[in-house]
Image 1 (spheres, each protein chain N blue to C red):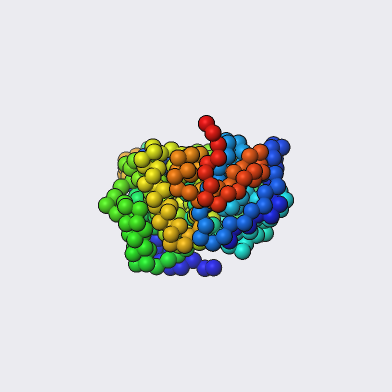
Image 2: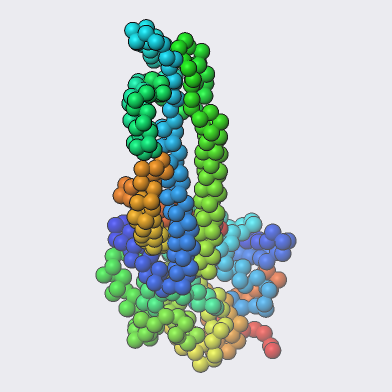
Length: 301
Length: 228
């Protein structure tokens, strides 16, 4: 027999009533949800930023190909064009940019000051090809291939540093993933336990309801609603905390790291995403926790 | 109405609580179930509201064989019975009114029907002025009256009571008995397990005596039948 609409309304009312009449139990459950969701929220912020920084660094890894100097400008041009074609034909290459030695000097002066303008008279630099790999982790292999081409004076890409960086980032991400899974598991277990205790305290009530002839769903649904409210209430403070904390961190940190590689994510889309995660997780944990706990006592007839 | 045929109940721990009981209780009867502690009274009562099923034999209530009930049908079966316990079994977080209304919400009755009927039965048990109180604010006798109100709110044909006066003082017990007599006078079958000699001797009804899991005496209008 399908449940009547007025019974659904009744369950809705009943869940709110139960929430207030079991105020201390509700408070305990909401606190548990709040604490864990704050942890999860802050962890999510850190992880998403780490990921973002890692991506930034990865995208920044370039290979600098210094080109041999040939005295005859015509020959030099032909050699450079040949080299460019060779590099472009490699399957792993995403982008090739040519920069003349004059442009290189300009960048040098911009970055390190007017002292270098002395070299404008006689530029000791070389023309350069900037090469980006499709997959940043392929950088080392790609550099080795380019080294074998004619007319390359040197191929520079930070070698070990880049490799170490990738290793570091990969381990970091893996550790982060394990940590976040562990944290989630602990959180769900903690909340499951708290909700279970609150429902165990009401085990007798469930027994009585059964004696009066209540069906399983009639007993269960108000508890599920209650779990939903606990989850929702438990996500409010974490959402505020995460938003305020990140807003402040962002505003304090951004001026200091302007123009560096370590860019952190903008406030707006990130906060919405993390808040959504918190809310969804809160609802899930609340409803699931109630479901699991009630199930145990409903089974016996 | 209530029929037991060669009922035998053995618990998993080996205790034989009911050892071959056959009994027939008709519509409108008032029956005391007496006997020493551990004689099988409680099991006899539990078999009636399908808290237990017989190991062998048949228990038929309102024409339904309790052994053949599927788990999903048990709630619907219990709605047709009223059950009253020694420890009242009220929901502690619900008010007097809500406790009684719960039994009607379970059968998805209309709210206005619920309101009317709940006030009616609370008036019958004399608690209409305490509908907003919680069980722990009431005396034992008042709690038992709420529990009785809940048991009859859906107008069952049978009310089963397991030592309803067990926790009450003599005077309160008489008040409770008056309510049961009224319920019985309205045509409802009442089956009551009790230890209360005075009540059984004063309000003469059918008395079924159980000892060692068997019916040893079944007398209409009888007395308690034990000397102190």
